[in-house]
Image 1 (cartoon, rainbow, N blue to C red):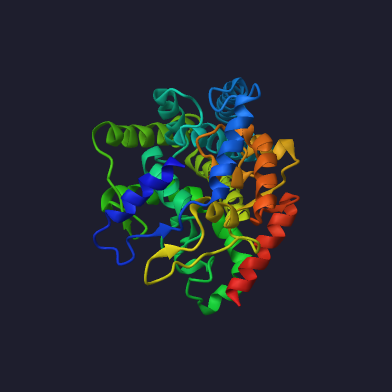
Image 2 (cartoon, rainbow, N blue to C red; image 1 turned 90 degrees about the horizontal axis):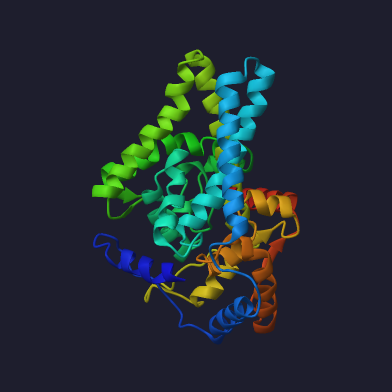
Length: 371
């Protein structure tokens, strides 16, 4: 919950933003009791908040799989029926690295050692993103102001879609439940070639300014981009034609983009999630921070261990938003405590039983927002 204080300071520093200050209602007894119960869970069991052996093993598996599939694609594959499945699998593994290694590292949930967390978060630079920019966009803006239009930049897709009731509706949005699924596939490509560079040059994430990277962080930004473009293009071009390299990159990137986009949408942009509007005069959200996190978020596929493993526990999005500094390996156990506490305090705990149920809910929400 440290993100709350950090992000409040960030928003307060926006001198040119008309709605620069946003506060939540005072902490209720619910938040304190939930924290007490989760602390007790760790104290009375063998669970570890960070430095989990399962997480270290998972990291080895994901990285070996990434470089193994990549090597097979570059040095072995010769036919389309070899290239296509390898590209799709590489896209899925790349998403897994982002969901698990990078995500836990960026939230200081991977290890109790800050340098380990920093190193793990930099796996995002390996797969084409900027760990520094992502921190401000995701850790700060999204995690504190979930589903609040104008504050949560993950809700902003420009004129292409209407994800929140607070967004303006355009005539062509009536078809967004069909075409947005295709645009989701372009997320990674846009991210690799445009978003990070735009944020670096303008000093803005969306319409909000942020501290641009300097010194070591700036060096990591450019070295990361150089490493990624070397892996994605320079090395493959030594062995294959430019058209095959571009086509292979496109398939990997589209797979990655769809998976990244859909996981976010199933957690927040569905019928069951709230989209709060601040009280204008005081710029206050009526719920306290913890209840806001829960009621704007929806879990899915909680009983599917395969989905949980690949998505880095992000199908337990409620638990992740409440306890981002705890390793995702623990989310299934924590979720039982969170759900029970919500029932006792009358807090809405939303979940979908499967991926398919989440897909359908997202589709219906897009249709509602378009019409």
